[in-house]
Length: 144
Image (cartoon, rainbow, N blue to C red; front, side, top):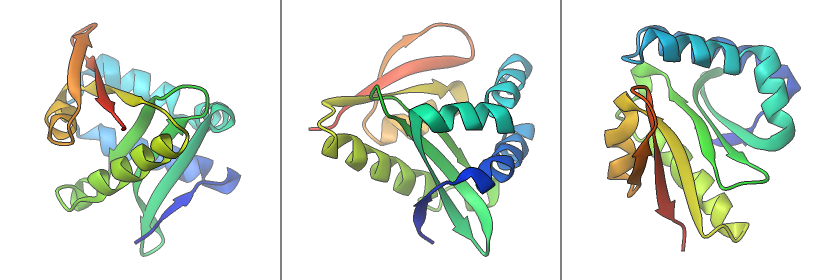
């Protein structure tokens, strides 16, 4: 399993993958609806212009996604197929994106973590900055 950049032919597959992952997640219904809209094929196409986006595939199926904004130090779109969670795929993607941010001389990275994922990010060294609502919290980590 390797990490590779997504291409235009991956937009629909990524959108369907993310929808499947969140369907049974612990995210609130409001957040699930937001994610569906944000990561529609059109939404992914818009993000593709402003972010470097990556996937991990296994047996020709997407099992993990991630992105790093080109203009900021935001990491996002971290979704892992539930059958591949707790097998270091999310960690592998995060380490890859953090390394990419470091190469770009970003002093820190940040994520908008959904509540169910806060523990995951804390294990990776992210610190809580603030929770703006009951759906997500802003977290940050130094890359140096």
